[in-house]
Length: 158
Image (cartoon, rainbow, N blue to C red; front, side, top):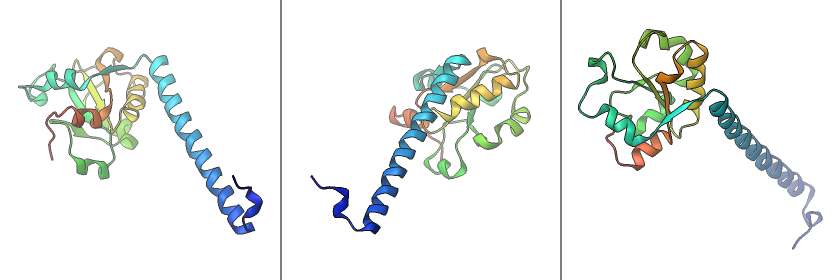
């Protein structure tokens, strides 16, 4: 094993900076996932599996029915290069609150299914819609997000 004193002052500073960055990054990720977990529990965010979502959209176009789900992709534009879930409407998380009412009214009977890359941002988006007055029973977050959808082999639109 080596001691940090074996390094030059520049090496020591670089190592300290690296360790600080690594620790900060770990703590930030831990806090983010903790925040999502607490939000999910406190706001009673409902999740839907990829299989359940696929069953909802099989054989129907969501835009053709008053009760079909509105599927909203809250990923950023650069993430859309990987494709999207069929019939999904892209509304990046950063502008969701500004644009959602143009897509679906708060008094709509249509379920709203939100997804992101891994299922975390969509939980936060669902919580934001609840605060805006959307019915909690009609809002769902895709568990595992787009990655889970893709991993399970469901259709992807380019």
